[in-house]
Amino acid sequence: MPTLFIYATRYLRRPACDAMRLRMIVTPPGSPPIPKVAIVTMILVADDDQSTRDLIGALLRKAGHEVIEAVDGDFAYMQATVSKPDLIILDIMMPGLDGWEVMTRLRNDPETWEIPVVVLSAKSGLEEVSKSISLGAVEVISKPCEPAQIVNAVRANLPTASR
Image 1 (spheres, rainbow, N blue to C red):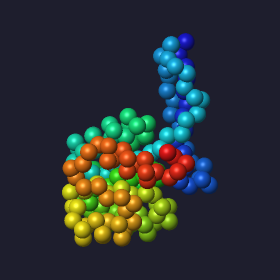
Image 2: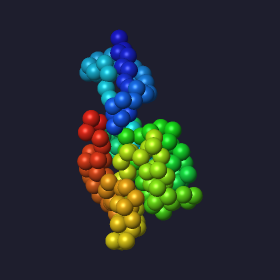
Image 3: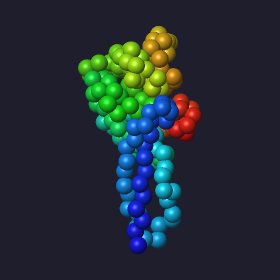
Image 4: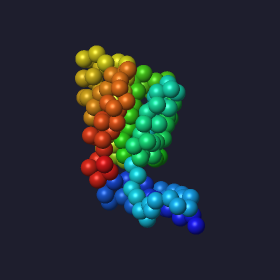
């Protein structure tokens, strides 16, 4: 008989927040037991390059995270304010708002100011890295990079309760 599995995605970086998303999964007969409730972290990947979003999304889903995507800066900011992800991976050079403007808006918004932002960009000079850090990035990764760098950056920068 199939097992019904319900899991909740919590905003763990804000312990006082009750908001959750519920998902239902039906497992096939003979599947190993699944815990009744599991906490899943949500990560926003904002990059105008489809192949980059696909690669990062696949890596993070394999690591057990829920992934949402944004194709430009305007949509990235909107997704962050609506979905309140646990972490954002953000490109700098995007159409519409660039990554720096997105970070500025996130930091000025009381609902999103504490979301960790990992910058993943081809702009990797000292000046660009300094600007990203000064705007609130917790880590800056230069493109191209190894997949393990992304996974390690996510692990290191997720709020402690979400890891």
